[in-house]
Amino acid sequence: STRVLPSEYALQYNRGNWQARLREKTNQTLQNSANSVDVPYDFEPQLSVKGFERWGNWIADLDYESTRFTHPDKTKRAQGWRHVAYPSVRYEYRTAGGFIIPKVGIHATQYDLSDVPNSTYDKQANRVLPIASVDSGLIFERKNASWLGRAATQTLEPRLYYLYVPYKDQSNIWNFDSAVADFDMSRIYSENIFTGRDRISNANQVTLGLTSRWLADDTGEELFQITAAQRRYFETQQVTLPSGSVDAQRKSDVLLSASGKVSNQVWLDTFAQYNIDSSRLLKTDVAVRWQPAAKKVFNIG
Image (cartoon, rainbow, N blue to C red; front, side, top):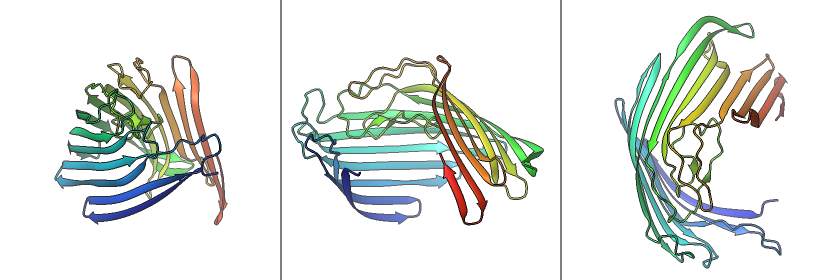
């Protein structure tokens, strides 16, 4: 059963491509006699501003957030403010046959903390890191293909994503909300291996991917797609969580996915994480949807 009961109040304003939100989030934690549930931080309050402006192919983004973290256990948990600003500029060049998107940004973080329980951590820590990337890809098409007897166009889409973030020692920064992110298709082209805002991984790496899709000629609907991707590291990943270890690997596991219609009534969604060194599947996900008639559906995963 749920052991943490959150309460959240928010005021949000949207205009054009911009959004501002002010919220307060508190948690009631239901403990047993052993106090086994970790009590999360409250946001009292949190202000965020996000948006972008476009001038032709040029796009300027801003991601700003200020959060005051509070916790009932002031003897073991730091309290105080964290301010984050991440402005960036990118240029999007897209054609029917491919794209290239260079991007540069500055990620700046400032802390103003109190009640820090360990002298290892800096109450007034700050971190400024440049982030640069180039995302690129090509799109090849093969006409007169078919999928389940339906006229289709098959694509072949190689993709290359390069990311550079210099190393900065972050061991003096208190960790409010960072953790190692799940390694999946949604994260392999991301800028950070961590979730949250307290850790930014150094990077000098390239991600290679290959996707093939079958698109219906009459509607443009994606009928089926398969993807494979792997990341290559040119430098050791040195940024860690508290008590974490340095990752010296030079290549990631291979990610594989396939999804779409496998018959007129059945849809399939699969994912696999394969380690080349050990020749082992580390993770597999399979989901099947069967829809024999209108208003009838069966899902299993």
